[in-house]
Each structure stands twice: as C-alpha cells, then as structure tokens.
Amino acid sequence: MKEFILDCEHDYIAFAIALLGVLFIIFPNQVSNIAHILLGLALLFFVGFSVIGYFKYKDKQVNIGKLIVYTILAIVILMEKGDDLHSLGIMWSVVSLQNVSEEINEFFAHHKFSFVRLIMIIISLGLALLLLLDPAHHFSSHVQILGIEVISTVFIREHHLKHKKK
Image 1 (cartoon, helix red, strand yellow):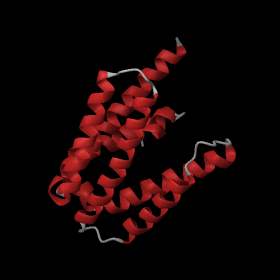
Image 2: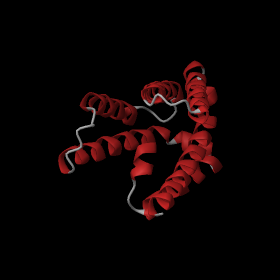
Image 3: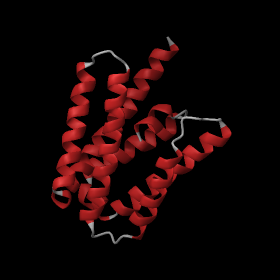
C-alpha cells in the first residue's frame, strides 16, 4: 500500500486514500465488520495494478509468486464471513510480517544506518506480532493504526513531491 500511495501520480487518488484513513480512525469497529471485503478488494487491486505495470510499463520488479499468493489470499478472504476476525487478523499479520521482512532486507541492503527506519521496522514487527498472537482483540486497534499509516504516507508523498520539484 505504501508503494502505491508514494507512486500515485494523481493528487485526487492520494486525497481519497487519506479520507479512507480518516474513516479507519473514526469508525474502526464498522470498518472491522467489512474488513474482509476491504482487504480482499485491496489485494485484488494491488495484483491488478501490478500486472498492468508489468505489461504496460515493462516493470520487471513484479514478484509473480507474490501476486499469485495475494490472489489466492484475496479469494479466500472474500469468501470468509465478516465475523471471522480471527483468521482475517492472522492473514493480515502474515502479510505484515512479509512486508517487514522486505523492509529489513532493504535496511541492510543500503549499508546506511537509519535510526528512524530501524524504529519503524521494530514498531511494524511488534504490531504484526500483536495481531498474530491475539487477532480478534487487536483488530480494531490495527484498523486505526492503518488509518494513521495511510494518512502519514500521503503526507510523506506530498513532502517527496515538493522536494522533487525544487
């Protein structure tokens, strides 16, 4: 999701995503009730945009295996009942742990120590583990955290765009 927001070419899409983040913060329980639909559709959109990028822009960094797994996860999630936050929370935590593993790889690949990035990795890892250990209890809190993360990523995007223009 972070990559999609940061690479977004249109301000109105970033604004809509930020509004979605606000809804996640204000209405975490209601979002939790439809989380299986939101997560399943988000995964399918990610897969769809990745496939388009692969063919249209010759993006060779697309991980086909990951797209297949995300497609399977999306289908399973969309078939789930909305009241099963336990399995949905476990799936969310596994995807989060996979994303943290990529962040860790990038952290070590740059050979430059970044205290802020290290703290973000530790926080992300801790939140993913909390969700994995007690998914139903921590789900609504994670929806709110996701809202904060989405909004902050939109602001980071705006910051990067302003610095690119200079």
